[in-house]
Image (cartoon, rainbow, N blue to C red; front, side):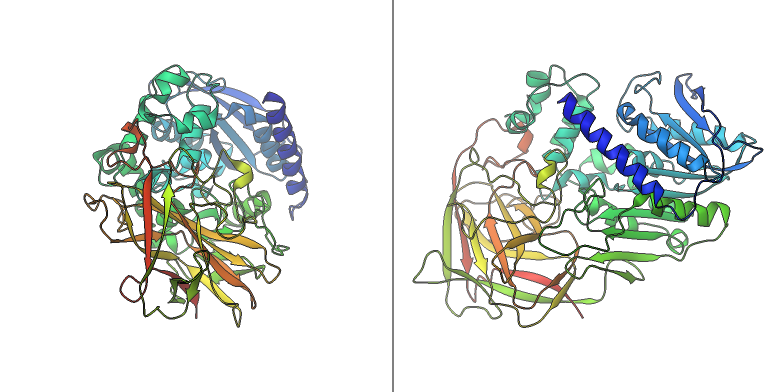
Length: 567
């Protein structure tokens, strides 16, 4: 494992060097040696802070980054060197309890006060002319959490792959995003966790996985896995509520970056929607066809214009605001997959699409033939399968993965009906190109023999050569079947109900001659926790049982996929 991590770090470092070599401004300054400060916070805890400036008399525009990942210090040193060689100062700091910083590591909670103290200190220094804050993922969180309380010298924040709506990053209609947060908890527990990840993700009851398998209780992880409702006090009061309200209080120009296959996309979009009007005028939301590490992850499609050099993009942003003192024009830039081009929109949510439905239909004489039709069937049909929680469908091609890295993105999919608990519906070939822009929703009419259960949907494009690649996927439980992210109420086994499966936004060009395919199942693991077919909080359940799942089609029970077709 250590050798693999060292290899990844080495490869990423080389990629950063190549990215900086593409910057429009070539080095013209000499970087002074770095100097280290053990910076005291308001409670006396000292944080390891590294400062580097160009040689010469300041003051300098200064870039700040705060991190909890000491194993990545080689990256931060490279960032500092490359910025200093181009006339910027650079400061990075490790969060309390990580690296050489003092204190106890508790994720999230101390970053607002520590970040505020650090920026206030920098604001008082003679060699800082202006300040820009940067970070990706948790490093972006450390920026978001102070974005509304920064001192005067801070002029902008460049934040990628994180959103302030934490509940959206944790849950989808009652099911926990395990591959993101269980994996992150294991790697950032504050003590070594050597247990197999998938064994941990399968453990029941999940509430005891920390104590039983990892060796120590982790209170903040237990809070995540037991507060399954957006309306729970855990999310609606205190720290997480405060974080969700910060975008509306920010007045600075922000760069908000995300990827169509980054696991923070849903939260990022909600964050942009919550921005104040003052900030939005000069803030940019940009979404590309990449994963959490800005790597391309779309199979079978030409992608020559990804523009995924984030180091180049960040430098241009800071150069414009901090040195040229120009405010950027606000707006939304999105990469259209399948068309290999970028589009610009005035804002988000997108308003340039209309809704078009394709209806599910089952062939009455062939149990393996299922269709997507432009018109509803005039007769009622159904298809059933058995869902066994101990035999979940494994995630392959997904938008909300982190640990299971190789399965992230739009990937080649198995053939139709490839398992006995996966039902595939396929359309006729498309007669023209169609652009999708916005949210896809699958509306199902279903019943189950269980008191509660899950249903998944995966939309894909099947190219003329027969290769199928996923576009979007989603999941819901019957308890959360209205897509409201809070329980609708109890479900009575055997009852036919409508269950909506909302999916994250996408910009995608469907090609002439391609078909659309939707796979329906009941698990997508480890992207989401496995549903045990029992009602109640998933993390408290110890036993699982099988369930008979039935999907209904026809004019009365009009199961359908609703597509956002660009006008």
